[in-house]
Length: 396
Image 1 (cartoon, rainbow, N blue to C red):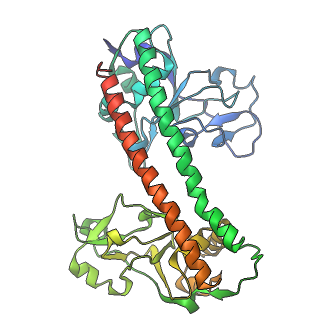
Image 2 (cartoon, rainbow, N blue to C red; image 1 turned 45 degrees about the vertical axis):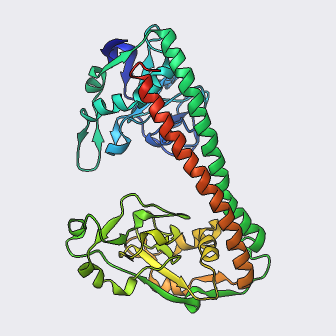
Image 3 (tube, rainbow, N blue to C red; image 1 turned 90 degrees about the horizontal axis):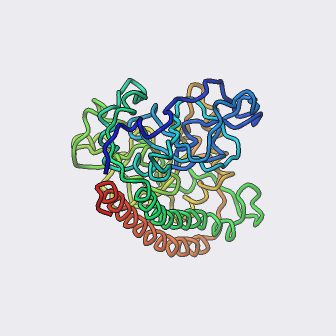
């Protein structure tokens, strides 16, 4: 292993072309921060500025160029992806750094894994400068980070091993993505598209068939008043479409919870985000976070025996229904919001409860498979992290 400054491994590390972007689709595509959000170059998440190849010849990416996020929230600083010629012409835009490998010193695939290694990210963390709304790392500080690299043949061997392991993870993620769509496919097969209601189900207001609809509040003192443990306070960040996110759970004490007795959460209550950027996200409340309350950004919908909670959740997740909810939210005078009365008046189809229960049983079976596959992916992620750690300690 040879220890060098990172900048010595690349012909250049530079920011991109400073040009105002839009979504017009006119001209060559330009990278944006979100272009590499999932760790790959996503051709669907680019901008445009009517550029021709002549306009941007100095900024066109080359096969093997690495794009790295250096202006973002702290957790996303250092995220990177390698460009492999898709799309065939791609302009390097602002706010992502381009690292062009000197291939006499470093293999691009090895460099990608080096930048993702835990050892490098620890050093990178020391260079991050935080501001009010974002964080950043300078090119100079990035170039100066010391890294250890083996000879090129060893780099290629390590990259090949990590590529194979990463490929297995990618296949498992793809399978999970397919399972994500299965529930909605079952819903459409059994009940039809809510937009057209081809099976002619009766339509009724949610408020007529809910024993509870309501939202809570944030305790006095805001986040400063949260506890290390106690009664869960569910916030909008915890509500994802069809999934409850346990990361970032807040907790309150018995005294604070007593002030929110009107919004005690029960298992399988349907949770609906009613304000902000995440408005209209929906999921069911899981049993393992109870006892719980909700804050002012989340509404509880507790259906009566008319509706199976699994059915109601998937109905509200249907694309056409989601668009109706968003339309209601956008009608707010000052910000996106869904009021209690709007929820009560919101109409849903009402198939027979027996059919809803059949749907819930099929969903439960698919969710069991999903949990098993998710656990397997988590184990693969841990094994990959261990493999990568060993690789950059010279133990692979």
